[in-house]
Structure formats: structure tokens, C-alpha cells
Length: 98
Picture 1 (cartoon, rainbow, N blue to C red):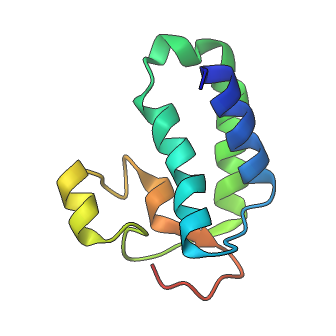
Picture 2: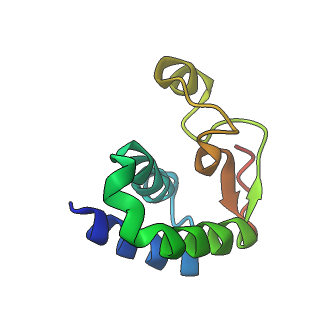
């Protein structure tokens, strides 16, 4: 996927973050991780769109104490709540605990 395609997909997810099931949610937040892993130069044209989508996503989700992929995966990949915050969020109306 190109940077443009990933940004557009993240914008769609951010507009309506819904966890139909755990696998869907993990796939959705993985889109943000893919964006995070891109060369920053690739994201320059999309910085404002990404900032707005991130803000929308944060506003429609809530923080949870544990990584949605689990503590073992977080440790194995070096994910942190500060750097990879999307992995520590669930839809606001969700009963997921994280």
C-alpha cells in the first residue's frame, strides 16, 4: 500500500472506529502502525490529514491500560503507550479492557 492509501484508510477508520471483533480492531490499528513505520519524508504531504485523523481517532476511542495486542507482543516489538498509542486504545463504547 502507498502512503496515500494508508492515510485514506486511517482517515476512514478514524471517522468511525468500531471493533466488530478483536481481529478487525487489530487490523485497524495496524494501519496506524504501518504509517508509523514509513519513512517520514513519505508522510510530508499528508501530515495535516494524519494529524486530523489521529485527533479524530483519539476523540472516538478511550485509553486502556494494556496493549490490545497483549503485553508479550508489545515487548517483542518494542511498542510503548507513548510512541505507539493506537495500540492502547479501544472504541469509546467498547467493553474491551485492553
